[in-house]
Length: 315
Image (tube, rainbow, N blue to C red; front, top):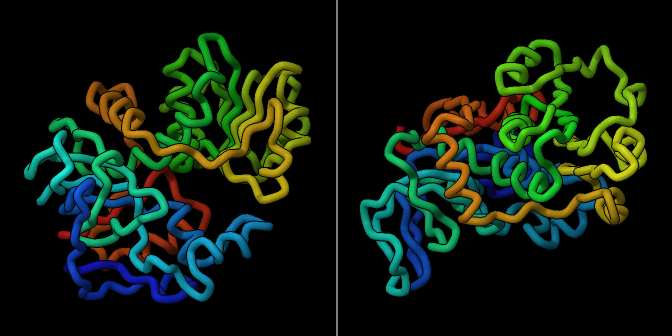
């Protein structure tokens, strides 16, 4: 099979398309023909060893000292089951599914071995591209919004045009919240289309001058710290630091949240259902086949990515 192999940490060009052995599966896994796979900020951080401040040493110990211990990255995907393990009862060959493979990754390839507990059935009306694009940002937003947003909540989403931000805006609106979206001027119209009641250009509006008016402050990009978040939130409001550095994570207690996002198959089912009925609008850019991986990483690294970036291994 063809796969994108990252043999060492470095710029986008270290991601090389190569022939690689097809993975074998364990009893609790399925072999998936990957039809579409996202190229996320998480993939880019690992590829470039560009971990949030303070996480460099623990991340290298976890992922590899000089290069990724698992050289095929890619977690959020959609595809078709080719083979099921002996302990898998809920899925069969030919099923269209989507899911995430966590730190095991391996989905930047034509085939991937995936735990059956990490996938959900993909509705026929949802494209593989949209399914792969929605899960990373959508599941992250769901993790942080759960139990913290309800009808009438006032929510600030900082970084409203990225994978997590576009999902956070929409999911908060679906929960009945009034959303203020912070993004760049070219993406303000997108945020409004996704349901934001107010849009702010971060290059014009200083966040520290906003009033203490939000039930939830959701930072998807990493430039709101604990102090600023609490200054923007109501006295009983929450602050979500979805891209916090080590110090911010260590100080995330009480009303400030900065934990790793869970990947739950039940969330995948919910997100795919929202895509199917049209209440979650996909914001996805498909760049082509695996050979587009360098361009995809360059776009992610630029910080100007809008929504989700997807490649198609069989194109």
